[in-house]
Length: 377
Ligand code: AOF
Ligand code: ZN
Image 1 (cartoon, rainbow, N blue to C red):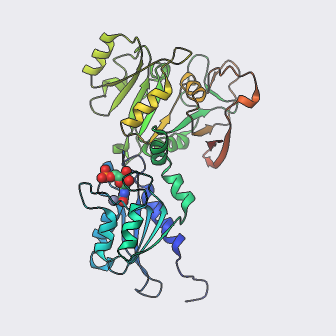
Image 2 (image 1 turned 60 degrees about the vertical axis):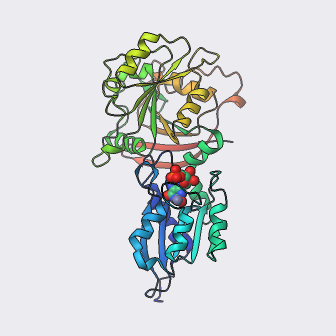
Image 3 (image 1 turned 30 degrees about the vertical axis):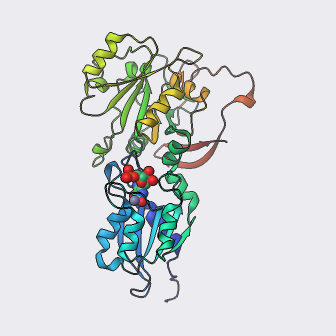
């Protein structure tokens, strides 16, 4: 080795597999997004990566079979770095654990074990039985962060919920007259479109639909096809049928959450326009029951949901204990108490009861900042 260089180690290669996996965020539901790097330690001075793969759109093919196909014969004798335990169940194709053995892979390094009941350790057992050396837990924390939506759905039966807001310094999302375009700058808006691309679904309340008439698509060049499923929380089905979301429901999946007692003729009209109606009960305040809505959304395969307001939907979700992350953009502006707050009334009487979060990331985005928070356990 030359001075200043060092051999690649397991975590370097796993980080590379993790970045491949990240490409599939928001595109593989109901499957997790997985990355795989095949590495031959015996080629050249520092070894060589001979194949890369990640889970393809809609969840198939899996990452390992992609990487094996790219490596061809060079896979023989390789070490595989996979961000999730290789599957051991027969799907449309044979299990990845068998495909790795078949390809001649001698060592498998795993970030996260797969809690899917069809896998759940059987991938590791299959590999070990075939004489493959297995090491798991490498970059486990980063691996679990990337799989947070997948793990949440398996564990809680609902998608991981991230609330995204764009506020002034004093936490306002709009003026009293409803004007909200634009509080944050161009770069922050582009960053928010990237968040849409990386989520399976995006949800707003009917008030925001009526006020802003948004499209909720990802309009970043090259990522247009990555628009998430669009969901409107609209207990009484008051959404205007002429709104952009509903008018384009035949092109981009659009769902609406209706509460008990929503008028049947509206349901039929919406269904006729291509909107899928999800019926749920009501919570204590008479709003659609968010826990039930999220569990239906999870049943339909969504692993991650980005909530883009408004304040009433945000407070319903906070009160239901269903907010896992916050993506909070703040612009250097002050709007004042006559503006609209990011969250509607929570009725708190004790600070101890306030939803609490830990900040996990901080980014400057042009003149604005983006703070990312995770709910405190
Ligand atoms: C892998 N590599 O890239 C992914 C895996 O519906 P199927 O048959 O495609 O199986 C889905 C399950 O496969 C999913 O729940 C998870 O356990 C695993 N996903 N496994 O080896 C991959 N995406
Ligand atoms: Zn597989």
